[in-house]
Length: 222
Image (tube, rainbow, N blue to C red; front, side):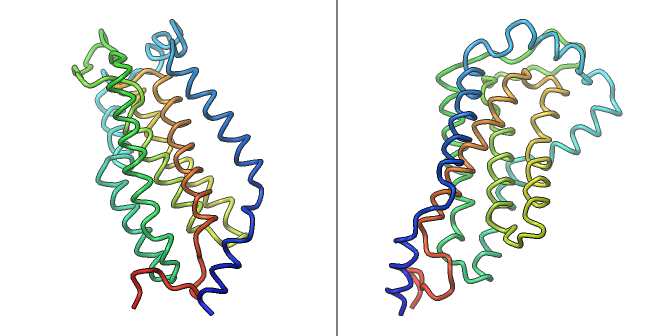
């Protein structure tokens, strides 16, 4: 019974694959554009207009929002999502969020090392940060983690769209925070959003090829 269910799942083609492909191509184009000059001189102009590092109260509030995108938060989120998927007996999908998070983070660090774009400087109250600026792992990781978890867990059609929108807002908020605090250029955050979404969508598309029903036992299940 398990083998036949597995064959049925494997033989079914992923639905709406062309929409996924078009979306990823658009996101990849945005990401690549940001890898170059970004927004050019507009990067500094935008940053100067929205920078709040010299305003203690606003800075404090922005830092609190930024905790949603901290490495600890995204790791807890992906591990918690994996546990929920196990409880739902969707065993094959359980490790996907954590694996996608680690892969996306590693690729973002590699890009930063190769590109070496300098951080913003010359702003009042801005602390010096030595790590390269593009793409920000604290933008890539939450976008990747929250979006993928939303896609995997928001299975009820009535609430699915709302869940995904919430995931995008929470996951994307850290990109805004990083700019407000002057830690990254606006184009850095745009690149981080695009790349994080690419990783999440690709991981979600991969799950289309995995058994998802409780009728298929995982390899480690005895």
